[in-house]
Amino acid sequence: MELTRDEILRYSRHLLIPEVGLEGQQKLKASSALVIGTGGLGSPVSLYLAAAGVGRIGLVDYDVVDSTNLQRQVVHGTSTVGKLKVESARARLLDLNPMIQVDTYNVPFTSANALEIAAPYDIIIDGTDNFPTRYLSNDVAVFLGKPNVYGSIFRFDGQASVFYAKEGPCYRCLFPEPPPPGMVPTCAEGGVLGILPGTIGTIQATEALKLLLGIGDSLIGRLLLYNALDMSFDFVNLRKNPKCRVCGPDADIKELIDYEEFCGVPGHDHETGSAGADWDISAPELARRLSEDSPLLLDVREPHELQISALPGALNIPLGTLAARLSELDSAREMVVLCKAGTRSARALELLVSAGFKRVKNLKGGINAWAREVDQSLPVY
Amino acid sequence: MPALRVPTLLKYYLNGQTEVTVSGQTIAETLADLTRQYPSIQPHLFDSSGKVRRHINLFVNADNIRDLNGLETAVGENDVVKILPSVTGG
Image 1 (cartoon, each protein chain N blue to C red):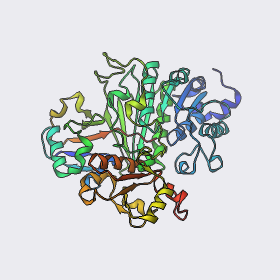
Image 2: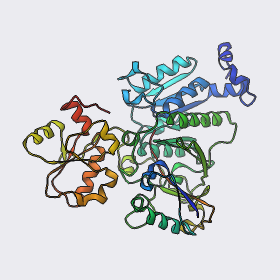
Image 3: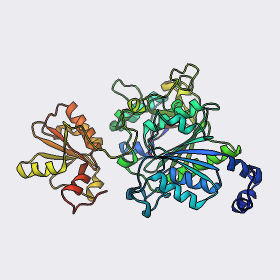
Image 4: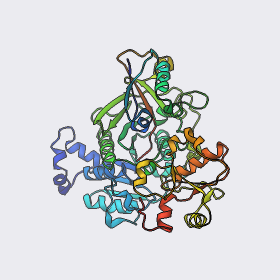
């Protein structure tokens, strides 16, 4: 695909590199990448692929920009809070490089549409924030025979690899099954250093460009482990798993499955925070109850979160230590469990109920709901 | 003694440390020593039947024990055992 005069000028610094050159830049112009998720990882990935001149970029996300995204999701801005993420990102990418095509898919990436969405693209880039969509992205890449450029982050740690079943292992070769629901917290629950997706996302973008150009040694068969606190980069070897259920010789998964059922969690990282209607109590209802009697308030957040907002008199037992501290609780007393947004407290409630506690409720939406609906002097975080 | 490394996700069960020393000549023995020293990490590595959870990978230096001798993989004095759970943030 020929470059125009304007493109030759724009990509001058690429054309000077012998490993890229005119031919490589033409390859990039003719290439395409699907970026699944327009969040922490999807931001740097899409920005750099757009700047580099990848001719067609697809963006899949159905969320809207909110202000808690902006600590790390640098493709968006304060002016696009409340707008669709794919539209916010598309405008920014086309401002950076109007010479490319940006396709937007403002839909959840699901088994019903994933193959059709991904089919036209050369590579898939996994910038998702949840296990169901990660397994879906992997399986789509395996079934369509495309590389899946993987990145994942938590607090200070990042992982990156290229899963490409034609030439090496897939994501399921490494992680045959997801963790039990709730065992591995998401960024919405556990937080993430804002720069971390920048580091891992730019590594994903680098791997994507190398694949599209056909240069260098890719991360196929290797997993990068990055720790920002130690500033350490470590690599481990990945091999195809002969028992892999999607890419092994005896694979028994031949088509896309129900990934939310497989993982036992929803395919998004939203803070829904409900334990189910029978177990939930709303913030206004709790306020009313507290004026009448005194159920025990059990706050299962980490101690440092109590500095942001707290309810007077609440007992703090972090979720991770609750199982070992059940003896501190009176099972006869009515109890309301709370956390930031109701997700960890729902898990705490499950644990309490399975241990024989019967008079337990979950504060739906957590202390953030309390701050929105009852006591506006408290901040939402 | 072999070193054992965990990611941020698990360091809170090792008093905030990402690397500790463990005794043992096999992966199984080093994990037994780890959970003896730091009992609170036990449920994060093993399920209720005592098997290593399926989302946890174990490496000796750069190699997955799945490609070696599983939990009986030998661990030398200067080796590094790495525990790698899946992570989902993005």
